[in-house]
Image 1: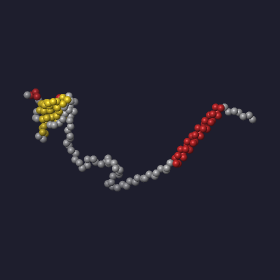
Image 2 (image 1 turned 90 degrees about the horizontal axis):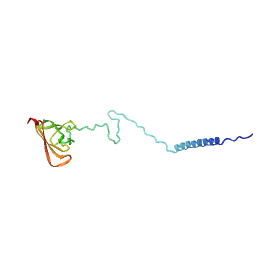
Image 3 (image 1 turned 180 degrees about the horizontal axis):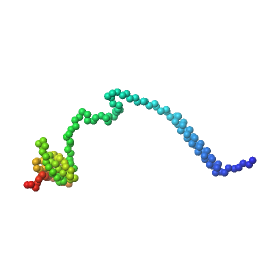
Image 4 (image 1 turned 90 degrees about the vertical axis):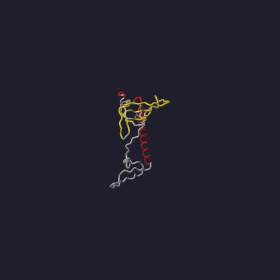
Length: 164
């Protein structure tokens, strides 16, 4: 019998297939032995909840309890802290003056047209309210375009200046 020679390309393909299958088998074997060498997972404790009436189920574990009432035991103050209004005294339009509890309060319009109520001492970008009477408000201007003035200016705005 005469032996037939296999083509070189077929031998080459068979050899590549055999080597790649062998490498994949070795990789799987290495992964399995690595998993066996790792320490077994620790047993986790099972959390058992004891439900008692009146006791909440939430445990903050040292953190702030988000369900606790933050205002418990405190009175809410209606008084608000008045800060500086970011508008110039020149842009203010006086709408009216109201007297409540023996004190005058001026109602003004700002540059955007929103009404504000101001009292004596309220600050603006370039000054503050000096005084309020029944028909006029006096502003003390301390700055002009962001630059402090050498002498402050008193600007008076009246309710009905045309009636005089």
